[in-house]
Amino acid sequence: MSSNIDQIFIANPATELLNGDLFYIGRLPYGPTNDMAILAQSIFPTSVGAIGNLASYSDTTGKKLIDSGVNFAGGFTFTGTLTGNTVVTFPTSGILVTTAQIPSFPIAVTNGGTGLTSTVANQILYSTATSTIAGLATGNNGVLITSAGGVPSISSTLPAAVQGNITALGTIATGVWNGTPISLTDGGTNAALTASNGGLVYSTASAFAVLAGTATAGQIPLSGTSGAPTWSTTTYPATNAINTLLYASSANVMAALATVTTGVLTTVAGVPTWNTTGLPIALGGTAVTSVTTTPTASAWAGWDANKNLSANNFLAAYATTATAAATTTLTVASAYQQYFTGSTTQTILLPVTSTLVLGQQFQIVNNSSGTVSVESSGANLVLGMAANTVAYFTCVSTSGTTAASWNYEYDAQSAGSGTVTSVATGIGLSGGTITTTGTIRQAVPSAFAAYTTGTTTLAGSTSTKVIFAGVEFDTNSNFSSSRYTPQVAGIYQFTGVLDLSSVVFNNYGCQLYKNGVRYKDGPIISPAVSTEDGISVVAITIMNGTTDYVEIFGYNAAGTTVDVSNNKFLCRFEGIFIGPSS
Image (cartoon, rainbow, N blue to C red; front, side, top):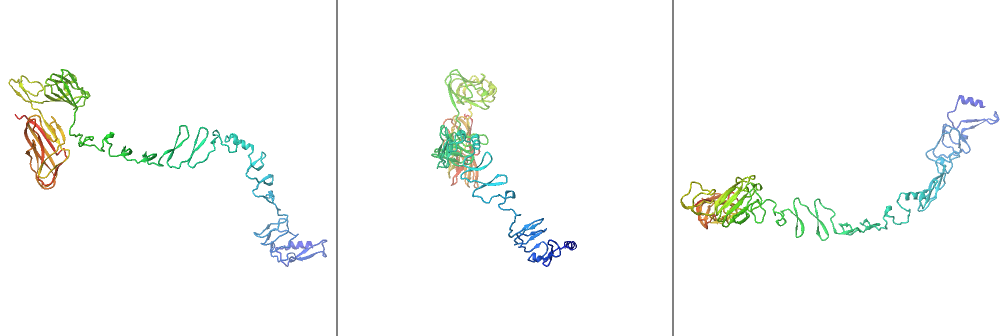
């Protein structure tokens, strides 16, 4: 039987298993009487399709399957033993009841498990030996430590070795953990501090301390005298703009003074402020922000664009000396006006020219009855001044010590009479020997020039005196209050020029008044349209040299007022001595 089966298998091997297939079974002793057959469906109660597909296989207890590929369908329950080279593919869902071939529970460490069947809450797992895991006993308020052998545990204290490391690092000198303040030398505060909101920590002589915070904004800490700091009573602003200054705006309150582009810090009623309109004269300033070129009372004067300096009068220094047949030595610091009185002679040494500037002058007046000899610093005669004469000495060289370094103008102050027998050098006379007896008169130059420094309003239908407050020069100081009163008798020429503004169609004229009475008129003008126009007068008259005086008036025939402008170039009053009247 067995050989026939083998021959059949070789000749016609089965590729599938059907329900009607017959299994032939031989039983010992093998023979015709012991052989038997059984249908496949008797072994597999349910239909079997092809080899390797078991749609339902539940009666498998105690049986062995030997196959190269068994695929269990979903929902199948298998109980049995798999042997040989069987490859089993399990479904993605279902229940698998394991056998001895499937690992038992709990899963050992060697199989990727823990070997434990249970744990307690908060337990930490660790390896107690090779392939052995155990649970670490729990503890409250502890730290995880290890023993000298490396065994972990939960402890409420640190190991001695760890505590030694902390001590060795110097954090805690003695290793005391009971809340005692740590000393300053060990990096502590050496004090039990209480926090204060906004407070500052500072050091006393032995410990740290806390300066309690302040409820007042803007206070700053102040150092003590090697003692505890305190909060300032004064408050300060939190921010300041660039370039601002701080000042006490009220008691114990500092405020910021806003800055300005250009200014000087001054105070007004004690309050600091920036002055941008000129530092007052009382504080050493000029009280102006630009140069004052028009003479103004109690103000600083300045040069105009042409380097001219204006004033009603320049008050030159004055000195007087009684002649005593001695020598008066002048220096660069000497007064401009030098007057000499008395009845004898005097010698005057002019300053060393190297100490002067070119054009520097000195006025010497000889009111004595003797001769005053004026010499250079090198004792060279410059001029012998007769009695009652005046001379102006001008430095024309700053390098010499002889008379050549000086120029002079020499004038007589009054007429003299008597017998002339010779002509003295410097008197200004020339010619041969004078042999007659009579009176000699020397012309004394006298002149002035004045101008307006403000407007003069000409009333309608009348003549009005014009005010000339500026004086360009006045050789004999005879011009005052817009009036000229010469002190040398003779013939004079006077000129008046006025510039009128906003005139209307009418008659206007410039008039010379003598001794308060209309004396000479200039041409009358009658402008056709409102414009700026000029009027003038030129006159020659004899002045008695004592009381005679002249003034300039403006005539306005219109019913409205007209102004004489403030213009030193267009509004002038001038006069000059021409010569003696006899």
